[in-house]
Length: 452
Image (cartoon, rainbow, N blue to C red):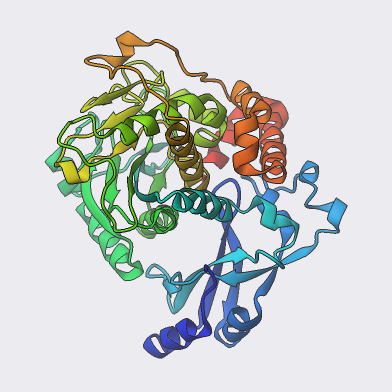
């Protein structure tokens, strides 16, 4: 049950008597958080009776424009649906004064037409399908981003380090680069602590000014994706507080590596035992079946993993972004990697998504693909040994329009997403595709992607 009890509100207000403003956050199909600000005296009504929000919010472009073709605007009179708070999501907003935030979802019965396009509800359904078969997904998100700033001429460049130096080289795993970013990192970790987001290891990534901070695995995959979404918002807000820009575009700079969104997944039984656990580095047969399902469903899922034109610029040979549906053990040149570690930690790292992907949709497609491989007892073929870029057997489709067409034709994706969800998602993406092809211009379109 997702809906929060009013007792959560009472306990929060008692603990935080200074909070006067509450942000309602609803995630749309593009991964953008939309909503309202409520005053303290309005909150009890939200928990007891819900709050009306336009169904059309679930079918907006990244720029926030209505898409008539979704059927969520004029065809239904821009009707409202009732949204309720998500349990456990009420928390302070450390970068604002006297403000808290709470996630909401459109109600399963009174959520209106927009409920069909709720990405969080979709992930809940996919997880429930796995659980009916005794499979409980354990997940963690891993997002890369660039820390940037504007110079006096308005150019966007890697942010200067605390010593005043601007990064000029990749500085991958550089300790000096991390030390130079400490004012930002300290503020980020402090904000994560306030919001209960399990931010852990920080590294300097391969691009100038590129960072990655890992999030802890969660036994509840839905919680893991909630935290991924909220972490992304938090990073941007903390950066903005310091006059910086945290950029999660998949490929913000042509000459540097892109930003990936890696998903780490294992499946547990009802007692929490890892069903992928094995002393063999490649894991159990169940793990290999899961990888085979990911391979088989990849082409049908690309538009969910890589939802924008910019997403596809990230894929280049020898760029640490995969270009074929390969798998391997301890190998970063493949799409589906089984990392090293003790047997109890055996899992698969899905390396395809860009950092602009909607975490809920990406996770839903990954888990549904794994479930497919298990049900059909698929075989992924031999693991790649060595340079996966030199051993491409079946290259991925790396073009936006083709990915949208493949998604539309896919019976598997239609069954996973539901016809109404798929039609709404495709209507939005076609509208954005038209914009990219000339209505707003490529440069403007890329800038809006910075919001993703």
